[in-house]
Image: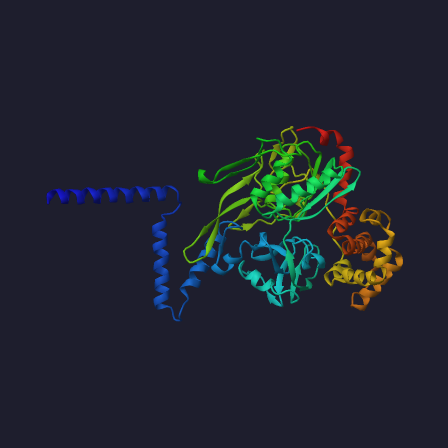
Length: 522
């Protein structure tokens, strides 16, 4: 009997010691005494549930508390309710029906990270950085992340009206968007532009990106590609693994592509290149403020290893790594566990405080600000830190006038071109053997421009001579773009578009002026 009591005592002591050690470990990895805080919340929730004047929904209150907690941390730690979790992988696999944007909630405002290429929003001229302040006339300020798809997605052919605030515009813009099926391919176009220069546009890093990308590379290589322009503008990111594989094609095996660091060492990782077939090809990458996350990993690694040049505008600056933790009721939380750093040690994440991004003027992001931290590439060049990837050559595109924004917002360039093609399609197909000859030789006549102006006036868009002249080149390119897309699809459309694109033209110029650098084997 005494022996049995002795065993009970030993068992109790072992359990007690185990509990104490567990509590110590918990305290070691937490800034708070978690148990006390959970108990405090449970007590408040219980008091509210018992004594509040009206009946309360304890589940809703708990979800509000979780959201508030996560919003205080950083812009990307989020709660995902059970219904939303069922759709969470849809954005990177298959397709969906909606308006076609990548979005984020930035400082309580629904912000377009990028319109999905070829989708309804892209066709109407909605831009990265646009802030959606109303949906169907109802304020969208402080809209929850899970409510956005409920309001913007819907059956193909249905309409939704969004009111947008755009930098540089004095008045809000209203867009009536017809929802459509949004295909989620990731390589929008790949073609030989001229001589031995290939072009590939990657709009996102989805589950199939690497396969699509290497297929495009192989096609261009067989057509004589000796140099490559990789367009990551408006690419909001996606799967890290896919970005790592794409970067590996250009960076010799064993070299660091990106690394992560967090408070806990278990979340520290290093991703070294596995090597690829194109480690010696001269390369230029195009980026802008809509290039985020995985796009920044690729462009940052290429820049740090001097494997190519970066042209365009400073990228978005999303360098936080989230890990998803499933909760027993079918919901989940994505919690930031570490941060992305480029090979030279630059933090990709732009500054934030109390869960919100600090306001940094767009102009300030695109100047060689010597107050920002400086790093050196493998070859000793100075590159800037402080958030995002600052290009080697900053080329800032002009903003469009209100007149031209109205043409795009009301889809008038598209409609005009569709009407024009009803009578001219066969003539164009018979005259131009391919999109390259069309790009070089087709001229948008003054008569066509006058017809467009008249068509716009019939839709209550008042002509503005000064603004029209300022944007004339863009309007002409937009008409040619729509004609080329109608006949030759995305390849023809992009071949036309980039021919008057200042950032692309700068890349072409650099293949000549920076020839020695770009031809240097790394």
